[in-house]
Image (cartoon, rainbow, N blue to C red; front, side, top):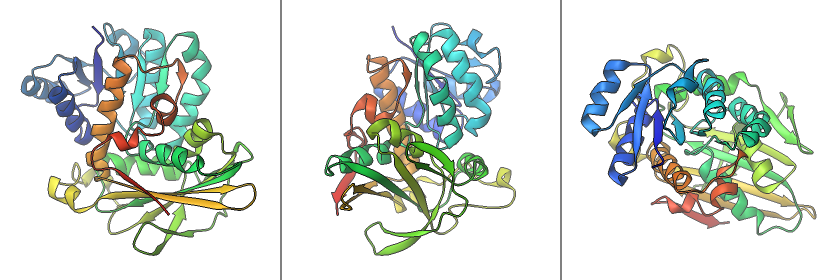
Length: 325
């Protein structure tokens, strides 16, 4: 029987994903570095656990596994070794990262993964599932699309793991896809986007959609923006942050994103997607993606959520709506 391995299962989002996998009756195990925390969670869930680092010998710990789902961030620190381990062990790799350099790595490893009959599918959480699906949805309304703009709204507080990943995203610099190529755009200017309550100013930032949007729908010019509200992007000692928002805090802040697709003739089509809070959405989407891959929805090489599961994948998660503008 195909078996899922949830790596980083004792973290804030990984634990929710493990609980979801248990509720669905999936065949899975959990893994990470902290033996005691893993043993405690494995005992609660009634599943096996494995203890290993995301290091050069990780492939030896993947025996009997079909799909690895990585929740251990910052992903720049774990994805390179785990992707290589999956290719060596012939295990499909999934993760929930928003860090663009992880997508670029998966893209570069695509040929090697194809040769090993392994799929590399980063971004099966809130980034990039909703935006990848939304981009595919809007692009269908446009003849000869040439430009794609994506804006994310980040409400409420951020988990400690996400805050550390954001440091990796900011460290990558401001990038855009221009004529099919990723280029540095340090002078990119903020723009206003309307998420449903009137236009708000959004800052340019580099997320994984700069890679997935190109592969999913082939639009050669892509720019990304984010609207930050409240204490969404914390500063200071990130290690002192709480694990993540409480269930009540998640319920108070739904998540939204806007996509604009510009046609060759200058016409613009827009839509907004609204979901449950990103921290609630991510374990639901990630485990649904893993379930589908276990069931045979896979293709070797680097893949994107919209390309492997179809443009309607985001809406398969309860509480998700798309509104054309």
